[in-house]
Length: 581
Image (cartoon, helix red, strand yellow):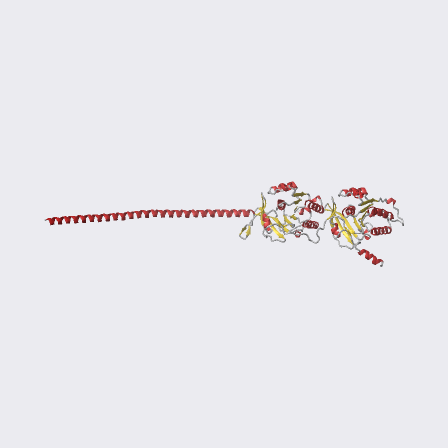
């Protein structure tokens, strides 16, 4: 096989193209699995950007998590200093050395002892590194920092030749090497190391923007592997380095059909009658004083009432003040805090940068495992109206919460002069549902209104609803129509009072008319009764007269009969007398 063909075969072999996972959150996602196995990687950057920690963490995590012993060769920091620094993020290097997982070797380089000659080489360094590798069977090696070896070497030809030999020697040993280098003025490193460590180059940057410290990472090159090419924020925290992720590049998180209540019955009805989908994101934006924080509090209160855990990130009020204020409208958050169902994280937005806020949120969510998270307000995390970094940060946060199946609510403060719906932060497109709150000034008063601008995957109301605060939380007022107008606030109350007064007058008129009708009916009944009495009296008189006439007729008849009888008797007596004569 020809030399060039042999070189190509080696470059394409599976062993050469393998990857060693770093164990550093987010870095393996960006690099597609880790750093190139058996090949050197350059980590370069200015002082204080985290080069030494990243190199040491790669080796230490390899030994602790992946059973790959490692060796760390130090040229500036002593082994004791590195041990103390790593102990602060939870790693005991002394214990790892005693268990044969790790070898530390500090090589002191005194520029006064270096003599530049034609025979200058790194043979002694190879022996030291080889001994460290063999002592533990190291699979990973870190060299920090390589420029120290050449601080007083002016002959770049000798320097580059020795560097080329060093990197070839590391490849021949088959170890996965991480070399740190100082940032140069016109190149990535002071001596152009990226020309020799070209398999993978990671650039670290530490910048100050608006008095806020931010660290960024970029994979400049990675031979033979696809990788993220953007700048990614990273943090140095209590658990080491965290590169902000990239938790779901393919948007393949689980979705839920279950609906959860917002804690406001009227709002649930506006959202299809059952609230929002579990695991979705809800944005509430509006001008100051429209009730965003109160709706957020009602949201977490409803989750805790269901027996679920919730976290409320507050950037405007302290925890005690928030609990007191919400109690004034009947939302009693302290009871959930006491039961361990609610955590309120109240901090100043300017306390730390966006990445620190995001990692703090990640850590709390991973530890507390809430079902609901509310952030009030996200607009306080930046001093710029159109902050691209905030949009990217929220995209990562929303993506992370979706992968956890966590329902999220975000509030956003808009300028008081903003009277139309709009997301000044440019994050509304990231949200599944969006509510717009507004204060309408009319007739000498302000009225709070709410409308649903969008809610993906569900029917929702297109009405503008008035809402008020009461002793039992937030209440939405039913839509009040008068003709072709919707009345709110005092106008609605006045019209309702007018309608009630008119109804009362109409009711009184109806009662009066019914009383008149009853009275007339009574009068008619009285007249009918009087007529009946008169008729009864007349009937009695008629009957009396008839009876009297009958009696008189019977008397006359009887008298006639008596007279007739008397006459008959007299006639007979007379006849008898005549006969006797």
